[in-house]
Image (cartoon, rainbow, N blue to C red):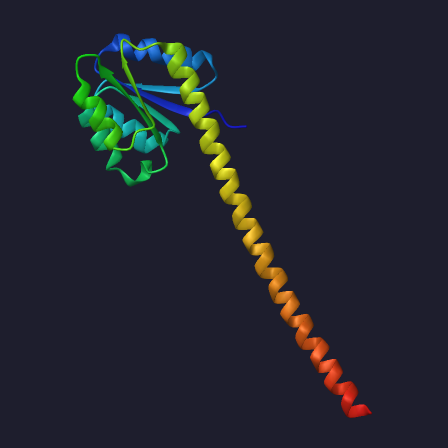
Length: 159
């Protein structure tokens, strides 16, 4: 099983460390960035499963990158900035955390979101396989029906 990749982005190194270390010890492959430029470079190169970030501008920049469409994004906001919290939710993030963050909560919520995403991907793959199988069996049924009709017609001609 592949290790999920997580990018942690914040301009305050304390927040990055507070989040990155517990995620890394939980078995995730963690990358860190301190600004938008680094975040965009790492995110497009690594295509992480999850991005945990602390600025609305960075969120908007990363959300505009099509390579990251399937990336789960979490947002950390300052306690006094409720507007960023609302804007993050409107932008389509998975969840929002108020700073200072509780690394145990973040780790568990990210783990649950990754599991949910994997379950959805598995369900999508199984649905695609099922649809292909149904199409194949439908075609086989049609061919069998044609053959049966041809045999019946041939049998009628013989008698």
